[in-house]
Image (cartoon, rainbow, N blue to C red; front, top):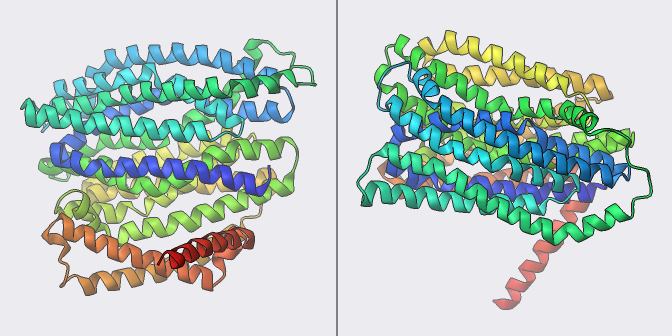
Amino acid sequence: MSDSKFLRGTLIVTFGTFLVKFLGMIYVFPFHALVGESGGALYTYGYVPYTIFLSIATAGVPLAVSKFVSKYNALGDYETSRRMFRSGMKLMIATGILAFIVLYMTAPLFAEVMLNGKKLENSVEEVTLVIRLVSFALIVVPAASLIRGFFQGHQSMGPTTVSQIIEQIIRIAILLAGSFVVIKVMKQSIATAVGVATFAAFVSAVGALAVLIWYWRKRRHHMDELLQSQTVPAAAVSTGQLFKELFAYALPYVIVGLTIPLYQQIDTLTFIRGMEAAGQEKIAEEALGIFSMWTHKLIMIPVSLATAFSLTLVPAITKSFTENNRTGLHRQILQTFQVNTFLTLPAVAGISVLAYPLYYAFYSHNELGGQILMWYAPVALLFALFSITAAILQGINQQRHAIVALALGVTLKVLCNLLLIPYLQTIGAIIGTGLGFLISILYTNMQISKSVRFDFTMVYKRMFQVAVLTAAMGIVVKLLQWGLAPIIPYDAGHLRAALMVIICAAAGVGVYGFLAIRTGVMQRIFGEEVLDKLKVRLGRRLKIKARGA
């Protein structure tokens, strides 16, 4: 795959994934106004078990199919790719239904364990209801995910992007409208509203599946032509052998897909107990809601960039690895680390610096919320880096190391939660998450270097350069925030806080972009060709505006 095609596919998914995350950020503000911090905790109680069951139900098959299809298409064996798609679809339908039944039946057990057998602001019955309503999505999502994986294996990123955007729009519309009607019109409980909000996942998944089926019918003719043009004999392997190869790819995807949900599940199981030990039982659920729901939504926006890279990275690196193109492989790995760091690091730093006005703008004037967001935002960089390194390991057939990395990280996370939450409360949970991801990243980097002889020197050099630019940006933004505080007191309302964020963020982007270009960092990361095209396009737009003026 050429660099331009690699970047084009990455940018398509990046745009789509960022838009999905942006929509996911926007809806949180009115949703928070409707259900509050305790409603956020209740939403988390339902969604975390659902996410874990979804990862188990799909068993990593959709992304593994992406790698499988990319590999066999590179060999010219389109028939084997199609065979796997048909068999995988049957498997996803069966496992989705089974996962739904199990989660629906075990919902009371999950609720009992997460609440530690106590009635806090949310009851066991309410948590059970929310888990059961969100479990319906398990019937549909695995099949939709498999179709996305098949398209991605063909280097076709449009269906994934469009279906995810449609899915998010439907989910948000039902979530907000349903919650509003339940609370404001029907005068029902917050628990009922949160239940409707989680059930929106099922309805939106049906909409996404409909979009993917439409794409399948539209592009099937082209894929059938590839099938008919096949000149190499199909792989002489049984369906059982195909599944054996598929699951060898899939298992690490399960592990990686479970990473953040597992960390969140550890928090839901240990956080309340730790806060009780710290004598903070009264604010335990509020803090958990802020940490695991409201601030998490904000910091996952820059992580969406890494998610997008992961989606395009696996098929691309698999192709280079299969063709034994080590030069191209090393270039793709380096480019991915560089671009991801260039985009993600300043984003998480900016969120951390503007944590208080940002939290006030989207949610409420809550000192605890601002403090948690300030500490939690930098951890998002580690989320992004682990997503990238795990994807690289999968692309070079070193999947087992992703499992070891997660095991190391989760073990450290459990220990840190047990030791730190009683003393540092929510900050202790954040430190535990950061240390867990850090040890996982160090291990995966070591294995990548060892497996394909990749030298990380240039990666670390670029990270240092980007960190210097980010520090300069952060200083400017903080000084500007202090200077504007008397004029725009961001703790005086949502609009003033939002205005503060917009002004400071715009200044930060301008400073960072200016320094990146003047120091040559942007040119070295993206290449002169990409920047020249950008300058040409911007120049044309400026000329058009000038003529219009």
